[in-house]
Amino acid sequence: MNLDRIIAVRTSKTIYKDGDKVIKVFDKDFSKSDVLNEALNQSRVEESGLNVPKILEVFMLDEKWAIVMEFIKGKTLDNIMAENIEKEDEYLNMFVDLQLEMHSKRVPLLNNLKDKMDRKIEESKFDATIRYELHTRLGGMPKHTKLCHGDFNPSNIIIGEDGKNYIIDWSHATQGNASADVARTYLLFKLSGKNELAEKYMKLFCKKSDTARQYIEKWLPIVAASQSVKGKPEEKEFLLKWVDVVDFE
Image: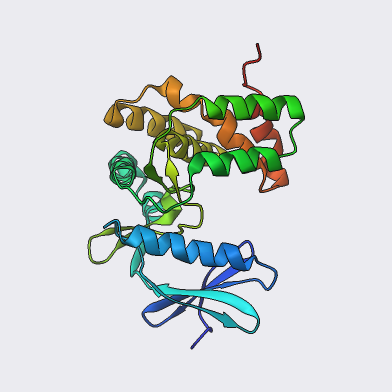
C-alpha cells in the first residue's frame, strides 16, 4: 500500500490516494467506534442507490484506523464553482437537485437525527435554560425518516469524469427531518463567509421543495448548538448569535 500521495488533510485524519483507491487514515487517538460507524454509515448509504464511493476495507495501520474506499476521478463541486463563477446558478441548481434526491432515500438502520441532536445540545456549553429550550424545540419538530448527510456542501460533492455526481464523507449521516439538513447547509455557507450564496441556496431549496423558509429557520438554533460542540474558536461568536434567536416565553 502506497501512502506517498496525500490528497487532503482534515482534522484528525489524512487522506491518501493509492491507484484506484482512497485511504483515509485517522489519528491514533481517534475513536474506534466513530471510525467503524463512518464505514457502516457509508456502506448502508451505498445500498440506497445513491452514487457514493464504495467501502472496500477497514483496517489498522501503525496503530491507526484506516478506511479504504474507491477513488472517484473528478473535481469537487466547490472547485468547479470557484473556477466557473458565471455558472454559479447552474451549479447551485444541480446541488439542490442532488440534495433533494438524497432526501428521497430511506436508510432505516442509520442513527436517528433527533437523538443525535439531543446529545449534541447536552454536550454544548450553553446554560441549562438555553439547553432546555433547545431540547423542547427539537422535541416539537415533526419526525421524519429521510436520509440526511449532516455536512452537505459543495466540497463533499465530486463531479466524476464519468458524468455522475458523487456524495462523499458520510460520517455524520442520520435519518430524520430533511429541513435540519438544509439548515446545516445554509449555516455552513454562512460560516464560510458565502452569505449571498447562502441566501440563493435557501430560496432555491424552498422553491424546489415547496418548503416554507420559516420552517427551516426553526432548525437553525438547534443546528447551531450542535455545530458549537466542535469547539472551533473562530465559529463561537457567530454560532452564539444563531442560538440566541431562541424565543423564550
